[in-house]
Image 1 (cartoon, helix red, strand yellow):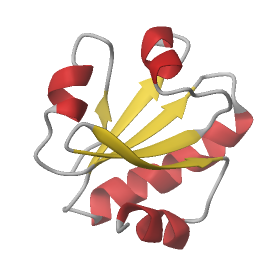
Image 2 (image 1 turned 135 degrees about the horizontal axis):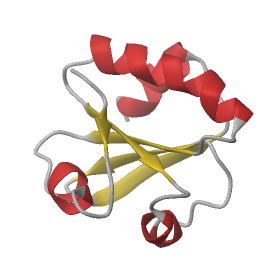
Image 3 (image 1 turned 180 degrees about the vertical axis):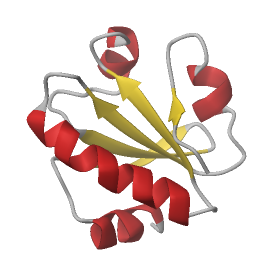
Length: 103
């Protein structure tokens, strides 16, 4: 499944109302670690059909980042039924992301 770029306009529909768990990648263009994590998140999206993967640019969607207390990036959040069930800050390896989404 392709990664979905999320904005304030589609956040509720794509993330909060999703029937599947959602892995949200909070990132920014200027963030080196975000650029390292991005291709790994893309691979997970392609390989894991049981989770929806979304990316949120924190510079363009500051209100969402604030709402989810994103203080450092990259931050991954696992959201189920509109509730955050886990977060991870920093670059993590693909096997760790797979474990993260299976919580």
